[in-house]
Amino acid sequence: MRALQLVGDRDLRQVEIEEPGAPGAGEVTVRIEVVALNHIDVWGWRGMAFAKRKMPLTIGAEAAGIVEALGPGASGLVPGQRVSIYGARTCGLCRPCREGRDNLCEHVSGVHGFHLDGFACERVNLPARLLVPAPNGCDAVGAALAPVTFGTVEHMLFDNARLRPGETILVHAGGSGIGTAAIQLAKRHGATVITTVGSDAKIEPARALGADHVINYRSDRFEGVVRKLTKKKGVDVVFEHVGKDTFAGSMLCLKRGGRLVTCGSTSGVSTEVNLMMLFQQQLKLLGSFGCRMENMANAMTKMAEGMVAPVIDTRVDMDGIEVALKRMEGREVFGKIVLDMRQDVAQNAA
Image 1: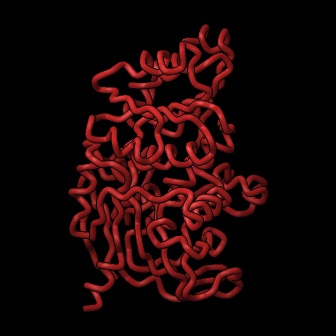
Image 2: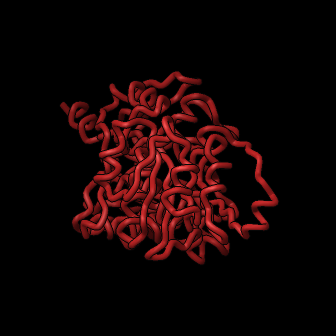
Image 3: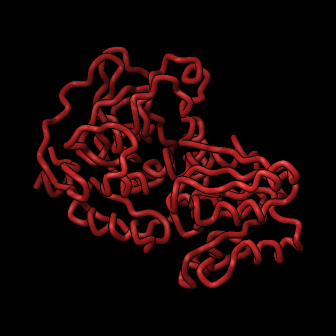
């Protein structure tokens, strides 16, 4: 079968690999439909893997597919069923796993597509416990975006920041994949949404998603605009994932007792924190990584009910993957780029 594999830094190739074979005990064979691209794919492509990994490595950390076969002891799924795939290989045995706090697994093996082989291939065998059934009304693209794009945001906004209706939130990089999800989820929850974007071309699309105020951070200092919009009170929550370039300004945007939740550092992993501001204003800085499988299920239910919808910049096949990664690296996208494996399967069969 065909797969996309990294063989070195910025060296990504289409290759033929062996079929996964019959699923083992507790496993399920999944035929991959859609892979959603993320910055973690860009990091891996650029060689920014923060742990040991072996090459060649199949890419793709976020995906959905159709159940084809069940191994001995696998339960809760049926052939033909669409599933969303949890992106990390957790143990399923430790206390956090047993309690449904999947992203705090004490013995996680790594993230698929970054440390372990990912999902940009035609079929894969996976533990049944890592598959979340998609409800009726949630299509392949929606299911593919549940593990990272929407699941991460659900975990950040509602598990960690505990966003409440009527509060005001600043969402950074509203044109990014998780930014577009955060605008929608926060707005549907009853929050006032302020967002930043990197160009005037992204202003109206961000407003169309529900943002109440949109700031082009390249032409305006976002912290000054936010203070003005909130009459110097500040926002209740900052949704941060940019990192070094925005972190200090994000803290200035918070009201007394406000919460900053962060899941990323695309502009740099280190920054300075004003400790006096932190304790005098009684701010809360919250780290968030990944999501729980319950977050994925909640996100797909909201998509199925029409509350939120994936924002797709571009659909590509295997031939378009490197151009897609370069566009993501240059922040030239609004929403998500998705790799439609159904096109590749059809071409391969022909």
